[in-house]
Length: 223
Image (cartoon, rainbow, N blue to C red; front, side, top):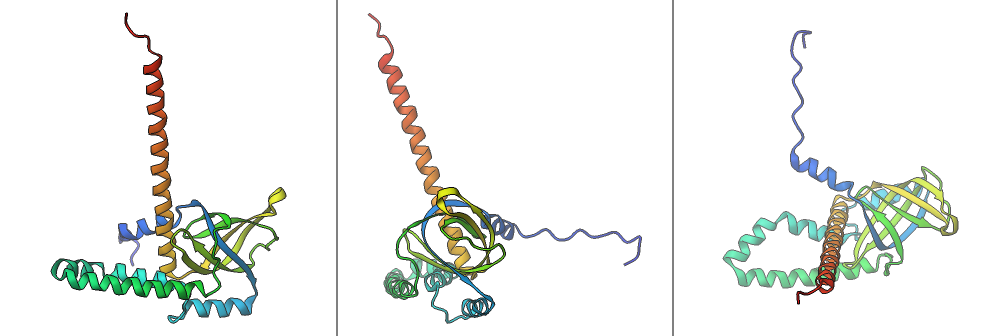
């Protein structure tokens, strides 16, 4: 390119991609099942291979949901043209999902929400009883409630601060996370945010209602 040739601006990133990137950083305080296992280089390689294997049973339900969303237009067309067939497909889907959930439950994921954590599609922060070395790697298994969403990922420890009587405050970044699992986290975070905003709005409405009722009750009546 010559010195006088104008520099062409790079094409703007599609809005859909920008929105997806923004959603990755949305965070929410959550109560989840969490299993953390430190891993060395050999275990890291095996875990990465397992996560990249299409036949992996971890996160099977998330794969099914991703496939279903991918074919949502065809599904809606089927519901419009052949509602009876669409209803039967839903029955089959529910049976497949029940089987996938049972398979996931047998893969060593936590079965109760026993850990408070700050979750996003980029990583998770949590209190942990043991120190974890910075830049070390851990095998994470998460169960998100109430839908029992199973997530398995390789993560790097980016923070481990002493937290008085709570042990340590740990933060990890996902380094290997399947895209279907990332989308499942984004949907979970968005759902909890929506429910929390709805709850705050209802609380604010109740507070205004009580204040208005009290004001009317205390207002002197004309003789």
